[in-house]
Image (tube, rainbow, N blue to C red; front, top):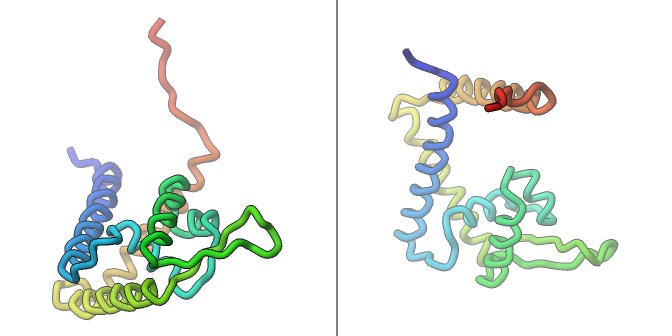
Length: 157
């Protein structure tokens, strides 16, 4: 008996890990060793914006402590510039440095190369759009579940 829902959950997780592996290989091919695959995704998600770590966490759905650590490492390695907010001294905003913009451009070109090859791999835009709608619907469903029910675990006594 197949369980499409459970299969979908596992596939989403596997695909995310596999894409991180693709980024890792691409970084190694380019001999970029001072930033990891997760950090490069965070960097790309910042793009041309200037964000706080909190905003970045919400935007990228990352775990907060991981974002803080990764932002710190990217600042140390020159990919991000940070600036304390004028209005709230507790808040620090980050943006891409010149080095970060250069890597971001390379990542954008990688995504474009992948996009150009997708149709030849049997994944035209129409199929991707359909898949994206299913994933958005699943995201909405999960969001709705956070306010309902809970685990129903029978007591062992």
